Amino acid sequence: MNRPHLSRRAVLTGAAATVIGYNTATRSWAATGDPTTSRVIPVPALQGTLTTSPATRAAFAQDFGRLTTTTPYAVLTPAGAQDIATVINFARRHNLKVAMNGQSGTGNDLESHSNYGQAGAAGGISINARALNRIHTITPTNATVDAGVTWAQLTEATLTQGLTPPCLTDYLHLSIGGTISIGGIGSTVHKHGLQADTVEAIEIVTGTGRILTATPTRNTELFHTALAGAGQVGIITRVTLKLVPAPERALVFTLYYDDLTTYLTDQQTLLADGRFPSQVGEILIQPAGRPPRYKIEAVAHYNGTTPPATTPLLTGLNPVPTDTTITDTTYRDYTYRADTFADTIKNLGYWNAPKPWLSLFLPASRTHTFLTETLPQLTPDDIGQGLLLCYPFHTAKLTHPLAITPNEPTAYLFDLLAFPHPATDPTPALTRNRRLYDRAVQLGAKRYLVGAIPHMTPTDWQTHYGPHWTTLTTTKNHHDPTHTLTPGQNIFP
Image 1 (cartoon, rainbow, N blue to C red):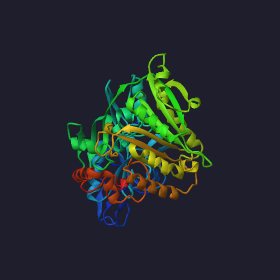
Image 2: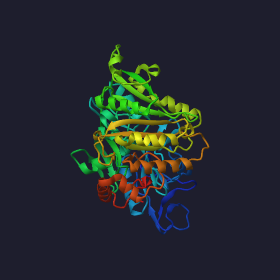
Image 3: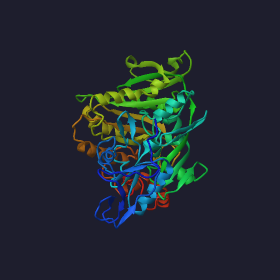
Image 4: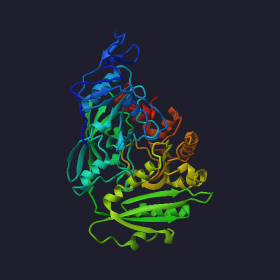
């Protein structure tokens, strides 16, 4: 990806006139020819561009969820971290909000891949992460990249050297800075934790405009609260993360179940012995009141031309034997498996429709209870063309304190990735999400911060973070004392 053309100073352009500054009296951008300029604060000098173009602002007003509209006053396309620091300092002096926007995706389908306005900056300044797109170095053990680089771009670059990030999201066309700010979950979470757990160092611009490097031993508190910290203490601009040798091929086992207890038992068996490096699960909601079916997708990796023996890999499992399939493919093709799904969704017209996703971490001891209560409430229309994922992981693999999990050794991801039929009113689904969330919390669950849960209150957030609420508020008040950053999470209204 080529870096956008950047001017030597700020270029802030409106619909019809050049913007010369920010009017503190009207709390709006002031253009040449405006009758009142006595309260105008000059635009700070930047190496990148800042625009108030209606078309650009509109492009940053909605996200992947299509459930909210958060139109910014302006959009910054930065030349680097210093531009972000300059804009943050300008914003905090004038009570504006700032948020990084990943603008991820493929082709012309570029947008924030938050689901409920989390990356929005209504009435503030959105930062276009797409401008930070350089892969700086790749070594046998790690890579250093700008935060706007996508996992697809990094994967393509590392595979040419026989390497891969150890943890990949199912859909690769997401910004690295965006996913590690939330956590970043994928099929290897039971082995490697979240994508945030594979990070070795970050460059970050704090809410006080400081550009800092943070590692496990340098600015340690900032390191651990920025990663999976929902963008509350700083904007990550550069990342160094682990790489591992990439396998050549993937042997994919697809196992089906008609019984929930057997499905969960086999998931736990695979988690406990770790025989597969990649493990996910899916619940298939059936029509006409029929009971759900359940699916495990487990992947064995290998090199060369001889795949591993299948019998030992299936020993001790109890799927429906006639429905089991085994597929041999390249590692690369497996990592890009979601692209075909995304293309189908786009072709059917579902991509730009509202998507009321719900992402939870359930305590393993209460997962059966939650699913038994919840699944009868869901219909195929609730899922649409989407997926309902459900699979376990070791909570100890998540090493950053603000990646909140249930207080048990094992948790299940419950990921309702709904793509309802176009023109479906999302309001009932949001009400359902809130109801399911409240019940899940009663059972000891926590939320994963990409989903759409309406009406989160300060009490809800304190309950979610529990003993880590003090950690979050203390670091927030230290590194972002004016609460300038990432207002769309609505953690600090």
